[in-house]
Length: 463
Image (cartoon, rainbow, N blue to C red; front, side, top):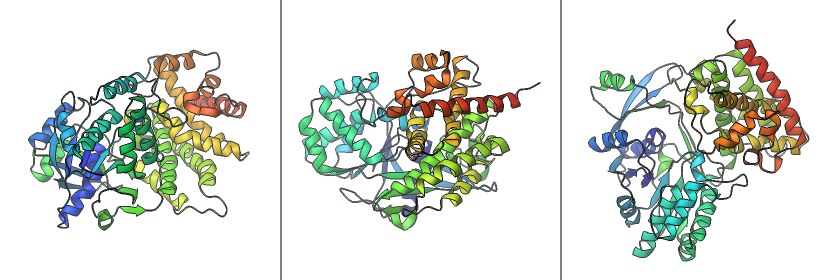
């Protein structure tokens, strides 16, 4: 397996499942890893110096810490412009799966979930691909691998999306084919249709950015001076549609759920966990808190997340005659328990990022379905209203940290905040809402939620 994106999540999730197989004596698969941009250079170098090995710290909700050495990544491919070494590994006949974690915003999709070639980074990569060069987006990187693989005749390949993107495999596949066509690579697109699969998958494990104290905890617990440890909660889940082009690890032996359709698991996770996570991060920031667990343990903030799931999400996912395979109320409660884990120390800054990708991906579907059923959206409207208040702090330069949002056009965001009616301006943004943009019911609900958020913020003001 070649994985693109050596961040904390991959190393605390996919690599861990392969480690479990290796620990059982199944050594038929191993990981190569690289980044497609010159990010995290210090971490990548540290991993290379350690032969790909690192320590994983996991923490239970009760605060019990466990340390485990992960050696499943056997090759670290250093970043270099042109990604030549990555392409060689991807084109190798021994490589059967290319997986990737590039965050939700790294897919450059428009509100209709189609590839958006107007985005400058993507347009630049389309031009590179037209010249036969590797790029700096996941499409440009994968296209270079497929181009080399086709030329070498090295056979079929599975492209495995490991990001929090609804229908992640099929949406990536459609966008990749659109990318290839836009680059004038019609024959490669045809080859890709015949020689690749892109299973949908759902991934779950909270993995905060490694805090400065982690290295010392690892040293004291294990005696290892590890320059690239990761930390995460004890909970872990991976659900994958069993659609692989050239074989796969026996993941079902180590807890991965291989299923015919990942959709009900995906919907529950994205709408309940991911959206609630953002809700708590935005509200916690507005309340002057730093960590996710602080907001989750705050009664008013926890109630916002609980009401959102109970009143608006569960009725969408649990319809008469169409039961979910997930126990949704129990899942809601487990999620909130996980978020309340004080040992994780996940920051609002990390979780609050990329709101312009998260609202259309995590929140808008519930709004759309509730309105289509003629139902109120008071609870779910609190989430975009919290984001608007958060965005207004950013607009005013009053956030306590730097806000990162790959999907945000800063000029558009500033214009929303400066509008005479910011709630209506947010509701009118097509990037966020697609065909719902400007809907009178959405505008009204956001205005009302905006008032409730203002009251919440006012109640936290220091006298």
